Image 1 (cartoon, rainbow, N blue to C red):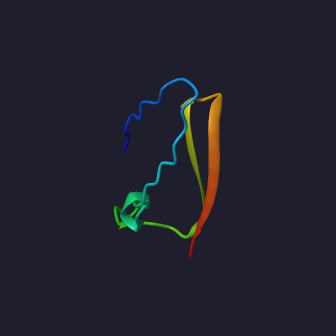
Image 2 (cartoon, helix red, strand yellow; image 1 turned 60 degrees about the vertical axis):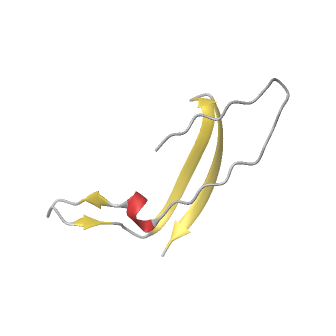
Length: 59
């Protein structure tokens, strides 16, 4: 999901959010609703050229 955060010029703040197992699920070719272990990148930014990336691992 998306939530727009408004900041004044020069303002910064920490934003925290939780990514759950359910957020990573998808339907596979057998139409099972699953998640797969692996490494994932979360990208946050105002546009596709200005992003910060954080990687996490699901086992």
